[in-house]
Image 1: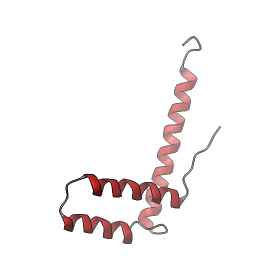
Image 2: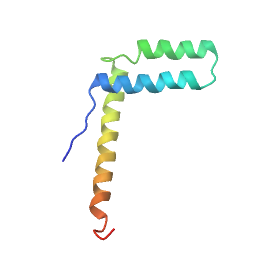
Image 3: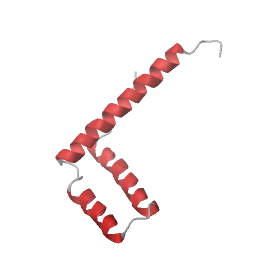
Length: 80
């Protein structure tokens, strides 16, 4: 069985990409965007408790989705 697990830096890169995309696409006031950027750079750095929790959650979700997909593949009949 294949095991997929993100390193903390990879989880931060995914998180950072999502936040940056949101900041680019969502119409927010400048002060709100600045607050989100400050939060991202201070609270959500690798090594911080909040980022560690997100890292664990992301890996747990990936594992759960992988298990669901694997079980789904097992249940498919051969004749399809």
